[in-house]
Image (cartoon, rainbow, N blue to C red; front, side):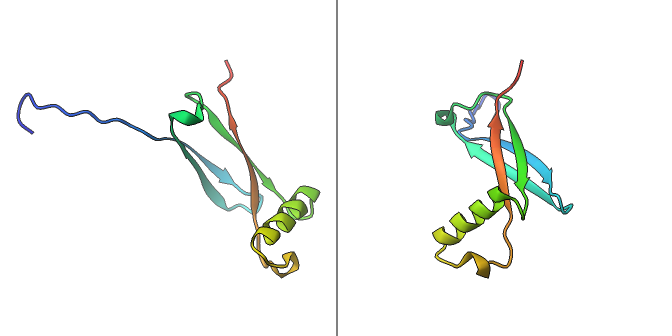
Length: 91
């Protein structure tokens, strides 16, 4: 770049990233990418909760997922579900 030249960078997508340690000790990186249309306030955070096997919520997600994939839920060898919420900044 020559002296006096300039350029502008416009960021069109924002991200919220959170590392989550599961009940079994594995680490997952959860990343949400969004643009201005999402109207997510600056500084928002991700709240992550794992849905554990043996709970009603887990069973519901397993059944619904299997149905969407056109498979029998009893044939699923492994599934992991997370409840992810975008939390606004609290003042």
